[in-house]
Image 1 (tube, rainbow, N blue to C red):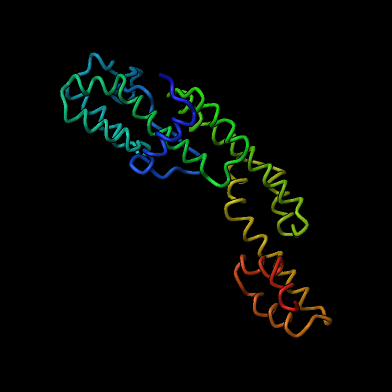
Image 2: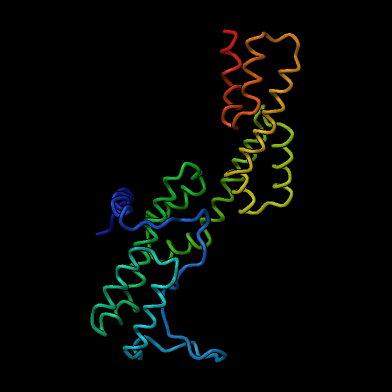
Amino acid sequence: MRLSRGALLVATTALAPALLLTTPAFATETAPTSVTVPAASGTEDPGTPVDEMSEEELRFAIARVLADPDSGKGVTREANEALDGTVEDMRAFLKTGYRLAQFEDDLVAITTILAKPYAGKRVTREINAILDAPTPETARAFLETGYRLAQFEDDRVAITTILAKPYAGKRVTREINAILDAPTPETARAFLETGYRLAQAEDDRVAVARLLADPAISDALRAAAEEVIDGTPEELRYFLEVGRYEVDA
């Protein structure tokens, strides 16, 4: 029976505490979906087919899977169970179990991405398309390449939205224009995660300094501005958006 998207989300969300590993902002290279034992260094032989592997080769291949830092908890669990089993259990893991365990881990990673506060329209649309007809291949492809590109599209929308804000000052505008001149997924994400906060704080500090330069402000507002000018980015933004108007209310 084919699971609905909602049922699949419930199932993978329930599994998340047991399966989830930390997911990077952009998924990087992960374990392949089939395993062979590589030949000696410097040869072109792609490796020994799983059906022809000896017990030692099977154990070595599974050990390589376990050593991969991108192997999730589902893969780790199934690999260890295979190592504790028979030769046929190990062979079955490499032929089919590995692919399905990776799929399990990938679904957890995908539903976790969907819950992120910065998962925009493009990311959400692509994930929902995967969950409507999930396969190991589509899930893996999204995490390896699709997520990075979809997040980049959403990030560019977020950045141009910031640029249109009335309080986007010189530092914010300069940094955004530098990104838009040579955009990459990495620079866009870094700006939204850390650069924007710091650039906005610099602009906000300038705005508070201009306020202090106004001789017409009240003593109470001046005291509040002097107190906040060396504050955190969040304190500066709150003061300019709300606090300054509360002082003389």
